Amino acid sequence: GSIDWNAALADATWFHITGITPAISATAAELALEALRAARKKGIRISCDLNYRKNLWKWGKAAGEVMPELVKLADVCIANEEDCQKCINVHVDIDVESGSLEREKYQELCERVLASYPNLKMLAVTLRESKSASHNGWSACLYDGKDFLLSRRYEITHIVDRVGGGDSFAAGLIYGLIQLGSHQDSLEFAVAASCLKHSIPGD
Image (cartoon, rainbow, N blue to C red):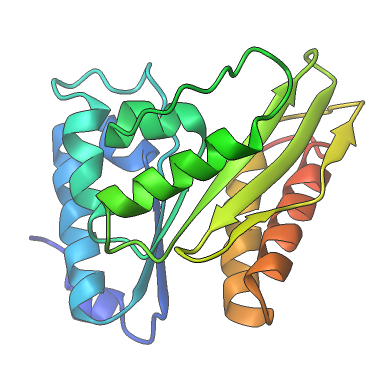
């Protein structure tokens, strides 16, 4: 109630939030919901990176009790398979430990999320294959309700710092969706930006 949303969101065209914010406290969760409602009322595009962090959800409610209300207000959702399970209660039997990716399973996951949250226009899922602390496979997929798109896959063999990899993916995707001509180009830009972030120290 202390923020003048008309002033705060003046001239804004995109609102991005991550699951970190509502995980911090009950009041932060209330503020997140208030912010998204205000952005929705003003017709601003909303993206939500689920970004599940189990060590932050300590204030009384689980992510699965809070995040669905936020996702119902979003246009674009960004996640990995654990985020979908813990935050929005969508489960698909994916073996995340196998080191290989099952395309059909991820397509099923995307279809289930969009079926459960019909307000969403698209879901982007990051696909990390952890071979060691310094060696990961990195790619992503995107589903827009019609086409299931896969990015090129990067072999990252000398990871400097993973921290910020998800945020750089989100930033790249948002940039792409605003500036580039296609969903495939947006996805490729996001994955490339995130891949590069693995070579840069610091968040």
